[in-house]
Length: 313
Image 1: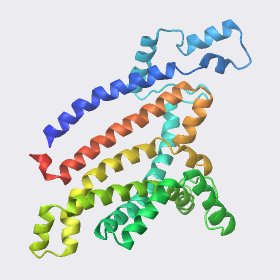
Image 2 (image 1 turned 180 degrees about the vertical axis):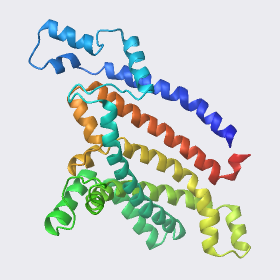
Image 3 (image 1 turned 135 degrees about the vertical axis):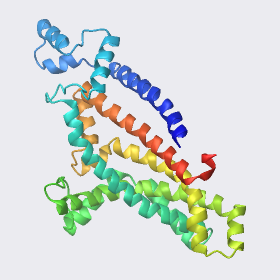
Image 4 (image 1 turned 30 degrees about the vertical axis):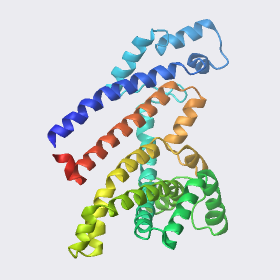
């Protein structure tokens, strides 16, 4: 296990460094001048020169990168040029909101997608399989923004069950917080549930046709034991990869869903930063998202190691 972790970490560190260089480099290719954005109507060359000197925009790009990455290593992501607030504080404020939404959406996806995929594989070619495939295709086809608007109209406007928009921190009112999370989590979770269903079904069909499954059934094991202990455990490997990638995508900010439900998460933060050319915020958010992807892949590898005994050899 230790040797496995060391090998993965040896790949992780240079990957993070390369990603940071890529983020910084691509950021510089965006059109527009942040100094002009900060200056507003004031286009005096002296003012522009002072702004560039204050934010080190007049330095060579390698020096700007080294200054930025050295600050990142100690938790300093720079300062937002729009609201004059440290980027680290903005990330600390917004990340828990998106993380909570991502967790609820992933829970919805797992509760719907994995059982549907298992049932679809067990009843392959029967009406249960066709129904699961129709539901999965619908989940992949229906746009999130349309489903979100329809849920607001029906459950908020017509029935009045849930708040139409807004976010209440759990520290203020846990009940209101959960009520405000149900609809956006369902909107995000249904699309991912459809993907989970398709992958689980495919993996289960492949595993159920294996020789060791036939042997387990021939030994007289209960069907539930065969499915859960033998089939599902081996079919879970590709689903773990998918879950890590989908959760990373959710952490990157469900832009449309957060905009529709007025949730102040990563998605809204990065959209506002891009429109206002707030480069420090964009760099900080994208770097955190990319690092989350890398760490989630590391956790998926560890899960492989624990679930699949063949990897321990």
